[in-house]
Amino acid sequence: MLCQECKKQPATVHLTKIVNNNKTEFYLCEECAHKKGQINISIPFSINDLLAGFMDMDDPSIAVQKEGVRQCKGCGMGFEQFRKIGRLGCQECYKYFSSELIPLLRRIHGGTKHNGKVPKRAGVELRIARQIQQLKSKLQKAVEVENFEEAARLRDRIRELEKLTGQQ
Image (cartoon, rainbow, N blue to C red; front, side, top):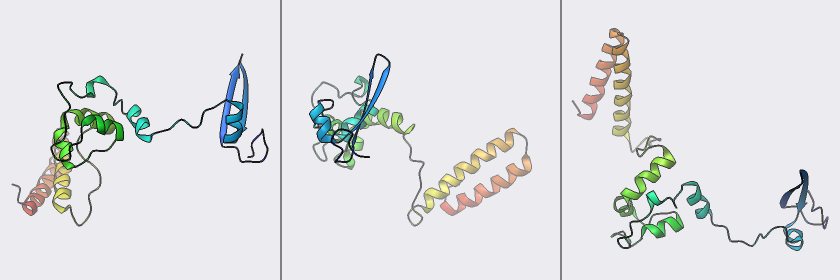
């Protein structure tokens, strides 16, 4: 769609104006939008600011304690700096800022344990451990509904898997 003003450049700005319940829509190029003074596109936009807003990182419950500026001993990054750029500096930051990160991770992901995929070649023991946990959950449900044949089968499968990992 071309700009409704200059009819030369492609329209990249969609402006909706509502005055006295009358809705007017404009499709303008950036240049015409600047000329009309309807929008200031030159405001710097940071994706980190956007994500910080979604994550409520300005929430006082996540704020850095005012006792002094805490910095990671591994890389020297402060939590305030993390809040600005949205990335931690090193693996030590996770340990050092855990009290601030745990509520943040819970709010974003709904928990603090990784439940995602595991690479095939580098997670055999982890996959078996997850399978054991799932089987134990099924075993508990089978016992609750008094399906003892299924419970015995699940118990035997759990024992086989525990032998593989050396758990018992």
